[in-house]
Image (cartoon, rainbow, N blue to C red; front, side):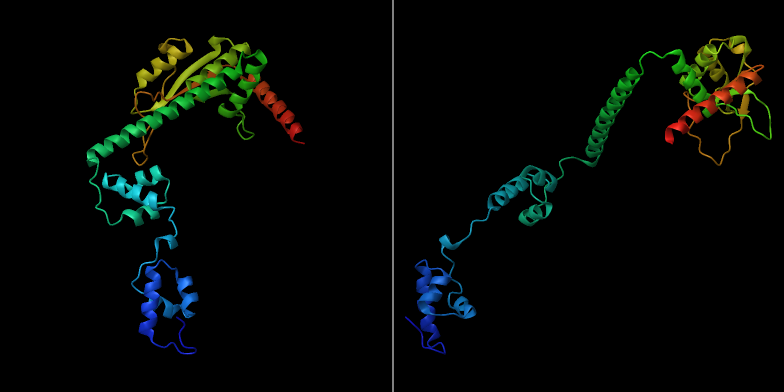
Length: 286
């Protein structure tokens, strides 16, 4: 069954022999060795059209996944769903099922928008609950506030939000302005701790002209425990039409201004307390 040396003689005879061996279940390597044909191009031409025997085929690990992907696609699954269910890449899924018809949308555009809204609402609800849990746990960590805790907090709070004296404008007023009711309550508790009598306090509302001025006055009066009639004249801020205000609606109540009468000495003490805190903090950084 050997061919002539040098040149291959009787190619048709060689093909008949190669095809016969192929049909007997021989591999290309076995045919090559038996016919002594070491030219791979010629060997492939001799057995062209003859399928390789089953035993020479390498199993494809993805054959089952491909079949499953096609089955799911016929059921109307999307690429995302198939990719998630089978753990395959998007490119593999696309290659396996691209000849199959695209499934009809499961939802109308309106239904899809509603589903997205519902999903977003659930996400925000979960985020809000997580926020509440974090804040509740943090609030519990504070425990009972001592007089010194309140004293230190009040000094820092005033120096952050209160009026400060300037070398070029010596006023030494104890004047505090804020829109946060919690901040106002801590500030008033601090003043009480310092022994500042309530009759030394005067109140005034600062608010935009377009807001509910009287409603804001009632709100702040209830918070600090006085009658709204004792409030000084409200400071009204004109709205600039070129700016877009976000502090609008029923929750907007402007700012409350609290002034301590005859507060020069208290102001000097506050400035001294703050300097002491800064000195101590600076020493920790050395």
